[in-house]
Amino acid sequence: MLNKLFIHSQEIARKIDQCAINEYHIPSLVLMEQAAAECCRIIQNKEDPSKKICVLCGQGNNGADGLAIARLLAHEGYEVSIYLPYHKTLSQESKVQFQIICSLAIPYTDDLDTIRFYINQSDILIDCLFGNGLSRDIEGSYKQLIDMANASNKKIYAIDIPSGIHATSGKILNCAIHADTTIALDCFKEGHWIYPGKEYCGNLLLADIKIPTSLHLENEHAQLINEELIKEMLPKRDDHSHKGSFGKALMIGGSKAMPGALAIAAKACAASGIGTLTLMEPDCIGDLMAMKMDFAMHLRANDRDGHFALSAVDLLKQNMDQYDLISIGNGMQRNEITIEMVKTLLSSNKTVILDADALWAMQDHLEWLNRNAPTILTPHVKEMTFLTNKTVQEILESPFSTVREFTNKYSNCILILKSDITYIGSKNDFYVLSRPNSALAKGGSGDLLCGILTGILGHKISPSKGAACAAYLHSKSAEINKDPASINSEDIIKELAFVLQKLRKD
Ligand SMILES: NC(=O)C1=CN([C@@H]2O[C@H](COP(=O)(O)OP(=O)(O)OC[C@H]3O[C@@H](n4cnc5c(N)ncnc54)[C@H](OP(=O)(O)O)[C@@H]3O)[C@@H](O)[C@H]2O)[C@@H](O)CC1
Ligand SMILES: Nc1ncnc2c1ncn2[C@@H]1O[C@H](COP(=O)(O)OP(=O)(O)O)[C@@H](O)[C@H]1O
Ligand SMILES: [K+]
Image (cartoon, rainbow, N blue to C red; front, top):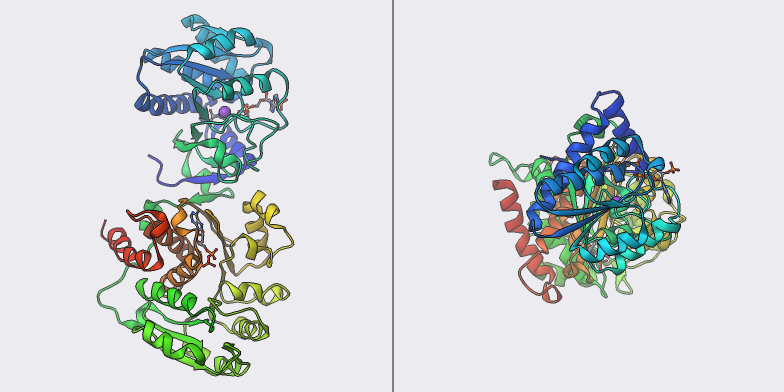
């Protein structure tokens, strides 16, 4: 049973396979048999044995997996046919698997017209043309096969990764199988979690092929966030505690035009268990904030034109030492004063969370991030353009390397790159959260996350683990039994209490 869901690049996944074979002495065919048995078990659980299955195999080891899967499915009583290219081009492992197929007399062909017939006769296709070894554009008969499979409208299971999707970039190399289900082998590949690769996977599952966990941990990896991981990491709350045990937070933000952003963040922070919370807001919204927030204390700063006046910078300098962690940005407005306040905070030794307008304020001052205390930044993809030289398109195409480049450069930063998939990186950890939910595709969702993050970081937890917990809590609390169009921040904050309770109890 896999308790950690690792994500690797093509190169590292290959290296891990090779290490398992050469250094741990697990024969390649043993790994393959394990992979085939798991795939067969998954398919058997979903498909009746009366179904006819056509397995499309390539010349490499993804194809060898396909031959082993075909054999096991035939053994379970499915009617199976196989496409296999000309014998001479096959990998060593494929040649062994092919001999077994021949001795069992399972029908196979390398002829495109015959395979068209087999595909039409089948209920299900299994795509084993290319896996982690795809290295260049697909042309010729392989392209014809992929087009044929996609046009057939049959249900398709892709093994390891849909053929045509590059395992690191998630890009389509000329054409790709559009799968209904993809069974990743041993680990996820980065390309499973980048568009368009993710979309081509359909329902994405992971098969454990029993490669030692240590091999994943000692190589560069990311982990997919799931409930088990969060249960392990979520900070406990000792009953013999006091308000000082759970952090003293200051949240800075708000303006006449956007008081709600700070209010939402503050409520989410309170609901996440912060010990004490103070809101620093411009005076013009002070009364409103006091009415909205029973729980918080208030540090009112002078206002000008509906936002902080310059004197807020001095007020911050005089007061900031009292707090353990400070967030800044929600509903704050983009102006020189925001830049000055961010600069002040980043010259301190406090844990700082930069959100929303505070991220804009960083665009010409990235050197401020070279500090000893942790800085947690929460950009959505557009805000990420303030922090790199990349365009939105380039960030979307390379989220793993975008985050890694940033955290390699700013080694005490934790970056939460937000979209319907969220990528969380630090110098030591990398987490990916994928729980698409249109309930969160609304203004204010980012403020909620910032509040939950501040609340969780008040507890004793490393900032990157805290960031992973906050991202999970945020999305899990938005999974409410209501139409997503109507789910609002109040609903999500209420649900958070039950999500936390369940995670801590189980
Ligand atoms: N024991 C193990 O190691 C385990 C491996 N496992 C399985 O192995 C899979 C990886 O196997 P793999 O490395 O053989 O790569 P695979 O994806 O089958 O294709 C490579 C072949 O395709 C060729 N080729 C590439 N691009 C091409 C193109 N555009 N058009 C045409 N040809 C192209 C390439 O040729 P070359 O580039 O060398 O000229 C080479 O011949 C992995 O996904 C998993 O399923 C698991 O069972 C776990 C244990
Ligand atoms: N379709 C979606 N599925 C899952 N999460 C989403 C989706 N759309 C947005 N989110 C999440 O909601 C939050 C939106 O943040 P942001 O864009 O900063 O919102 P705002 O600035 O309006 O508060 C992020 O955490 C993002 O990951
Ligand atoms: K495949």
